[in-house]
Length: 94
Image 1: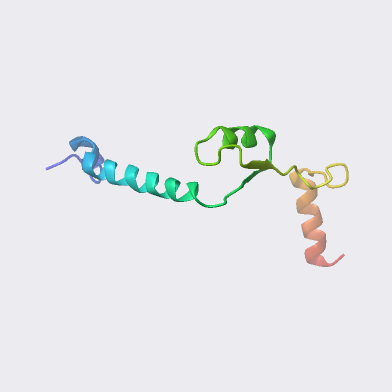
Image 2: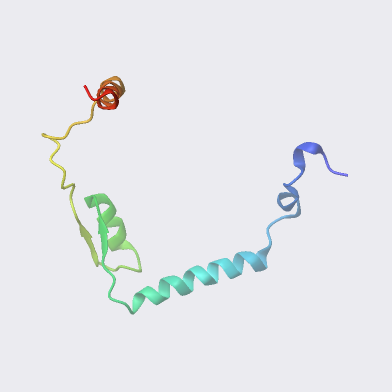
């Protein structure tokens, strides 16, 4: 009999299933290797993510930065109260 708080967590008590772990890792490696021979170019929204992708083994300098295309001088975030007021007005069709 197990403690009520540990029901459903018995797999943590028995330890890691190494065979399952190896299968998961080999599947991930196969998926990554399948990308090596394809013409895949990664896109990232920032220079930081582009740099990380270029440093990876999969993309090998094949990542491109696509900057934010929304003009933030025109489209600005509003406070929650203002958004709710606008939604309320739209609901009432004022």
